[in-house]
Image 1: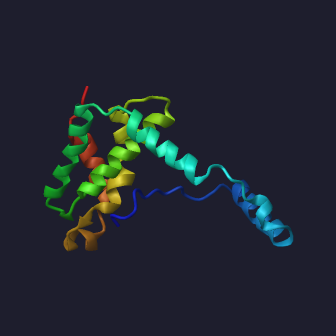
Image 2: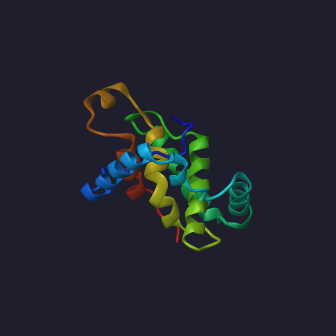
Length: 153
């Protein structure tokens, strides 16, 4: 679980979107399938974007402390294993990417908050008695702590 940076659920497509998906599949089976694949970037461009984010997007010490505050989940009575250091690093990396997407060269608390459930939720292993009951998930626990952990100003 810790090998995946984040877990997202997009839900089901609308009926129109699903119709388009099925129609494209039927057309693909009769046409050249490579005609539908479009290159949006290459390895060099992707590496340059990653290096830009790592080098140019500022992260204030208060934001780092905010990310570190999620370590408290490890001590939750329902949790057998909380977010690892790699999980917190992933949260930092994605928060930086969100800042760039939003046109900033600095991270704000909302960048962290917007992705914390998707980055940390799947990394939490519940104790058996909580996992069996199924009343709470790792994502739920992250959401709880988002409301408990003080947000830097």
